[in-house]
Image (spheres, rainbow, N blue to C red):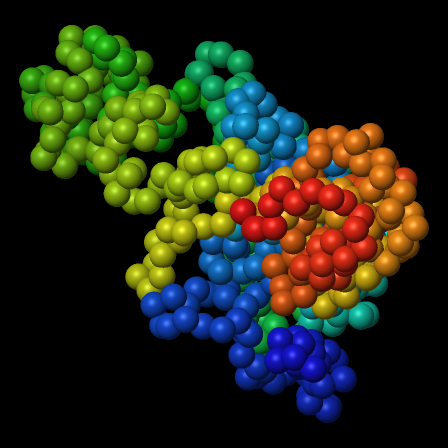
Length: 537
């Protein structure tokens, strides 16, 4: 048994219920929370060695699992064969064949394409759950239970598993059956009611803040659950939902109503309880000024050369300024229109008054502080080339996220995960590929053999010599194009997975030794020409 297999077996056994201390419900599990080989103290990330099975799509779930991946977790993203995550098609803009939307929240993940309508597919996911630490899903409540992949079912075979569900409204309750969409949850939770111009209609926030907030809550809950498991030795179920996340984020708006019965309203860029604290139109743009106390208001008046305002009895305190909001804002607005945004920024510099321009996105990424904070993350995508996405919001002193894995193609890592994570043999993998239970994205492979179809067909045991000879004789008809790119498995036992040959006369084939394959073909005289290439690209 290889060392890697031993590690996986011991890791699993140490997390099963039969290995818990007898008659003890609370204890400290001293099992090391990661099994990966560490490269040095400066390279250790918080979640190194933690495996996350990602059954989510769109935004809230992928955002959460991306953060876990940034922190070192190995994230295995399960996708539908063919189409994958819904957001892959959400464009334009597209970068190559991938939508910018998908690229933005799916770095540091491996993609395995599994048909969950196939019982063999659900069994495969169950096997993955057994060897993973965390499962995150965003199906409707009960949907995965129907497949045998619910928390109750998986916790029986994987008691160590932290199972996190993301829904629109929760696992139970009168609205739990409804699907979760950011816009709907934003409306139902009151977020849209408080967003928009003072005298205008409700407005949807410019980004899906409800989804993103839920993703952040999810990531934090998973981190807490990992710590909890270190104390109890067992996993648990986490219930995250869009409605709860957004209502929790109402904070003081909710408290105003719950304690004082004050109904919220829209204020545009302004603040309901502080004046001046909003955006002002300038000669060439917009500037936000936030005078959070009386001293700052006095400084604003000084910068505007309007010291008389600070001395006015109507504006002496924030309470009075709120009472005389419209009159004061009219005076300030007229003054701000007299200069450019750049001039106002120059005048406010060093005063201690919080202010800043309303930037467009081009201006955001031209900001040197944005670049300094590492918020432009560049990667080499296997098909789209050089891409850039927003980087992690948090930086750590002991490690960097400067070399991320690019967002995957659909099924880019199927064979790798089946072999390395589950330990499946090549024969089993080929059977799953042939039955379309799983698919492997061949265009994503970094190493390929360019061999003629005759070489590949005649080298497989499932075809047989006579059929291989016949196919070789008809090669001018069947080899279109005459060079095929096939998978070379990155292991000590190179295997070419040939499920793509189903369009010809053979459903699937496997070359157990690529070099022996070439030798046998030449020895039998099944083709007269030199293969185009016998080298890996």
